[in-house]
Image (cartoon, rainbow, N blue to C red):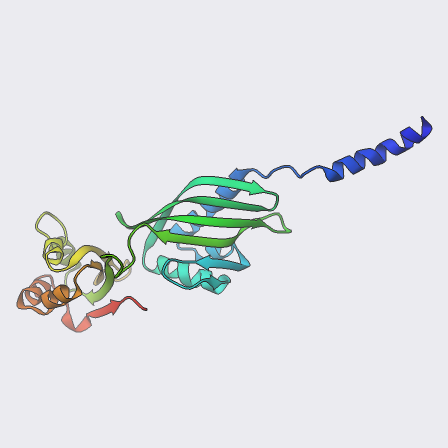
Length: 243
């Protein structure tokens, strides 16, 4: 009996050591994911980067895998610079020890306009400090890739205008410039304006027929429309998607 009493504490310790750790609450992952969404929408790229491990891998659509904080700042910083905001919707989240995954869908918007929808798969790792961080982040669009199966290319046009209100009005209403562009190879056009310099404006265009769009822009009709809208032709810059 005396030996049993002596061994009992050791047995309890041994049993405790063999028990699996209590499962982590999936809400911890969802909370961290919500922090990512808040940071992106606030334009805080450093807060976004802080949510990733130093060797985290990013697998963006139509691009090579990238690794580390510089990749995070480059990829998501470009979204912030473009004025995009995002909304995440988790579908399934599971946690096993210090590892977890989170699967869901996303929506990217520019102002009130939806510019992309897609899905994502995240893996998370809990570090020695107890904080969960992304270890892998992969996402891809629901929309077809440019040039694949009828998918659209994208074009950006930047320019200054004489009267910002006049230019914006030309893109509003039933008989707007959207109709002119849609009739000439542009499936969708999103308008942008610099908050600090309202005269600096721009377009992001989803193009189905680049030849038709270029022909319209250089035609008398296109040039007359630009002049009527107060576009300063000498400030116009056209950017195409980088390969």
